[in-house]
Length: 274
Image 1 (cartoon, rainbow, N blue to C red):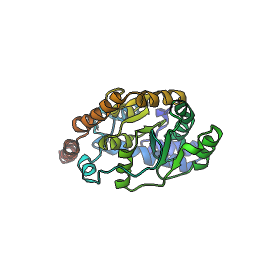
Image 2: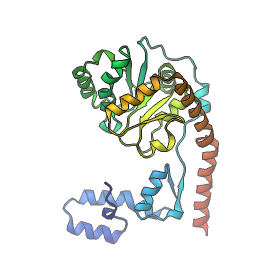
Image 3: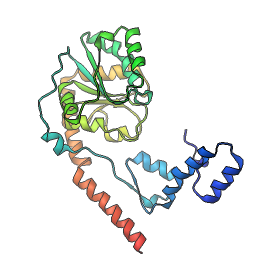
Image 4: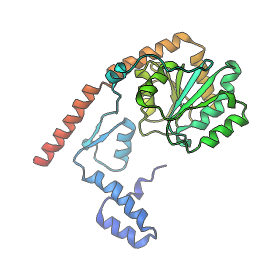
């Protein structure tokens, strides 16, 4: 859990911590990360969760604006629309992200045999950079008998990534923690249904049954059940795709969000000028 009482915001606090702690680099890093938050005239949080965290850190609520990230839907629509050529048996489930435990690659790997009990031909495609835990992923698949269903691609360029979204049956985004999480919005822009974990920030953009499905936290069996819920119900899939498009238009419109960012900068300028 976060320790808000451990943060260093002022030079006197920094000097006192230097005097009593044996790790000066860690103390200095603490100060350099957190002091600028107090100096700022305005802060932009990219989620309600981040705004609540900043307030818990003692930062004035009146200085914090909440403006989420977004994807360029028009650009996505301008890319080649044909799906990627994946010569794999269906259903095809896509993982996009670094192979880190924070991202939950191991949760999907452990859910794979449970999905294949009902869909024996299911394929699982993993793409992304930082293959730090590639060996761990492959070992899980070998151990649970799904190595033949595991397909690991490199990091695709943006055009190819959107073609992948269009080629698969769902994006599975089983993260344990996210600062924001853009792949679900990318998938919505490409007309790909989203399955993700019910964790803060992600569950602000993905609403269960409306524009995606939320799986229980840190639960391979629950993740598998959520995947099966989607695969078993074509009508649900269609509703989620339509809900994703509506979400992007209503809550993540780039022009409107850009205008809000500009207003925050203008307010900050007036604060300094006044």
